[in-house]
Amino acid sequence: MILDKRKISRTQFMFSVACFIQSSSLLTSFFTSITKQDSWIAVILGSIVSIPTLLIYSYIMKKFPDKNLIEINDMVFGPIIGKIFSIIYIWFFMTLSAINTKDLGEFVQKTILDNTPSIIIVGALLLLCSWTVRNGIEIVTRYSLLFTFIATTIVISTVFLTINQMEMDNFLPILQQPKMAYVRATHIISAIPFGELVVILMLNPNLDIEPKKRIKYLLYGFLIGGFTLLLVVFRDIAVLSKTIEIFLLPSYETLRLISVYSTLSRVEALFAISLIILMFFKISVLYYISVMGIAYLFKMKSYKPLVLSIGVIIIIYSFIVYPSIIAHMKSGSETAPFGWLVVESILPLITAIVAKIRKLPEQKKGMSS
Figure 1: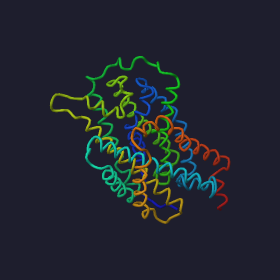
Figure 2: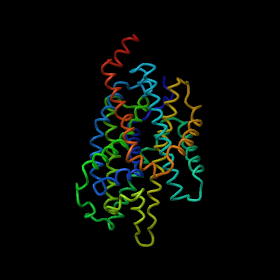
Figure 3: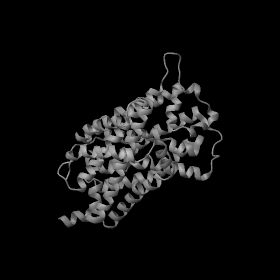
Figure 4: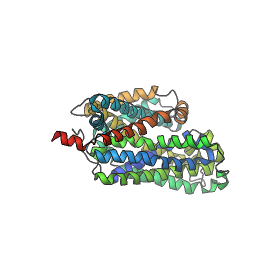
């Protein structure tokens, strides 16, 4: 049963992965407050640690090329345990949707529309996302290349614009943080944003890519997104030095320091534009897979009747998921990565092991025949 028969090309998939990672540039304060001037090291370590998890995703995608995560759970664990796993995943997707919606709403309100109520901003955002989701995954991912290009161009441009503000001494001393600081930061980065790529398992049946080649485009997208995140952190450390740990939005503060003559100031608007575009993309993807997950869980014939109702739930959830952005930052650096680890790594690993032991899906096909 395929509720959305539209396909994603290899280019769309690769840049969707990159765009999804780039959207987390708002969340660098989760780990910069821990590793300070060594945060660039944590990004590299987090990228390396995330590779095995990506290989698990690739294995599952290869074994079940025409099934999404909800269908895979039913095949591997049966209708009861499989639904328990699926409910956990759907809760995770809905939570990520609400958190990212809240983050973007608060960012827009505090930096651009300070006199506009949050409900108006969030409502307008979700209404636009609902139109995208209703039209299917191909529409959701169609502009991923453009969004990635815009974000990458802005990051590279701002690196050059901040050269006069950079000091290489800001990276010193190296490796002077407590060992557990690097472990914590690496764990945070591997969970947020890299581990959140578990969402691609919901897009598996929509990929117009040979199963064996999916890992290649997944890794390409991962490298593009990871390199952009590393460049952002490197730039912010070079400009802000150890003060990077005190800012909730280090990138925004970095760009506020740019002033090239009188004709080029307020460059932080570039960061705002880039972030809004990327977060719109990420929320649309999370919104889409939340709707699809519920539709598949209840074996509905169409996902479209759920779109608006799920959107309303996400809006309500976004106002209660965290009392403030500070609470979110505290959770993101202390508790959330541990819960995310279960959903992003442990459950997929269990799925891969059980599928291997039960010789699925080959055994399933044999039984059907």
